[in-house]
Each structure stands twice: as C-alpha cells, then as structure tokens.
Image 1: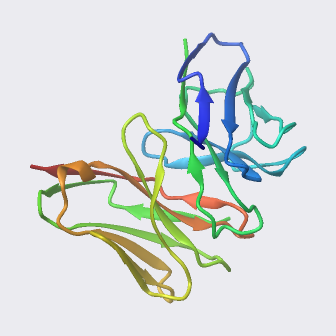
Image 2 (image 1 turned 180 degrees about the horizontal axis):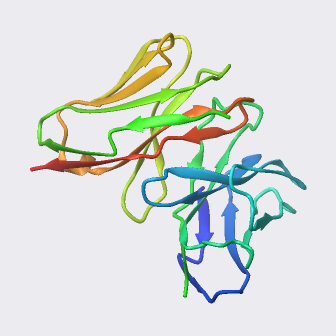
Length: 115
Length: 112
C-alpha cells in the first residue's frame, strides 16, 4: 500500500538533546513538508522540500533542521535550540510542488514530549 | 504573509443538524481551497477542495461555498452524524502558491 510513514509514534526527549523524526513516503511525490501542530494553533509549516537536495524554511524553522538526500525520505531534527518542542509533528507530501492544486497526503504523526 | 482565520473554534451540533465552519483569507493569486478532516491521534486527510471555476462544490453531505470577492469560504456538513466528530482545517495557498496556510481548526462534536 502506498502512503507516508512516520516513526516513532511517541518520542520522549530530555532537555538539551537533539532528536530526529523519520518520514518516508512511497508515493513517488516530489514535494514533502513538515508541520507542527499545537492545540488551537492549527498546522504551522516548519520546512518544505520541492526536490531532492533542496529545502526551504517555513514559518517556524528556528530550532529545526532537515535533509532531503532521497526522494522518499525527509527527516526532521529537533535541536536543543528549539525552546518549546513538545508538540505533534506531521509530515506530508504532494505530487507536484509547482502548484498547490494537489492534495497533500499526511502521515500519522509523531508526538514529541520533552521531559 | 498569508493568514487564514477560521471560526468557530469549537462546535456542538445535534445529530441530523447542519454544521457550518467559516474561513477568511487575505490575499492569494491562487484559487485552491481545501478542507481537511482530522480524527484524534491521526494525520489530517483531504475532505473536499474547491478550485477557481466554481463558487460551490458538493460531495455527498459536504459542501464548500466560496465567495471570492469577500475572500471567504465555508464548509457545510448536512445531516451531521456522530462519525463526523473530528477537527476540521481549512487552508489557502501561500503568497507564491507553493505551500498551504492552514486555519487554526474547528473541533466538531455531533451529539447523538
């Protein structure tokens, strides 16, 4: 079955640690996105990538980093510089990044909690 | 920067009633306005979307109404069912059309 997988489902981090969230898609989509979801704030864009080896900052990129070495993979690292990292993180992909007239498919999410 | 204002924050509707959620956007040169549905602990999924050539789109019990001059669009859920209880997000294209900007979400509860 085609889709987007995110791992782990739950992640606990101690303050000062970096953690990496995995996102893999087998939909052959060019574009991939990372969102952060907090209660009452909707989905806020962290980073997005329209093509392999290229990515752009979204609205809340500070304290996060990404890589796009393969078309199917777009891992997100939450660094110790992110002051309030506890949130639900969602990865998405879409077919053609040149237009928004394409459905974004979302993964099941990773819930990160800082202890 | 594009902003999308969604209302209400939460909504309680009786089974069989009509649920209405509204969104307003600022500026965009692109006309693609999707609605996403999210169940607790899951990722959002596309529910219905409207493109520039129509002012209304209906899929089953779900209807989008689009008012370009007012920069507003809304989701109507007819004959609301308990299974419709979820969080609903509207979205609008960003300034350059290469990303979506989401509203804050509406938590819908349909009482049986």
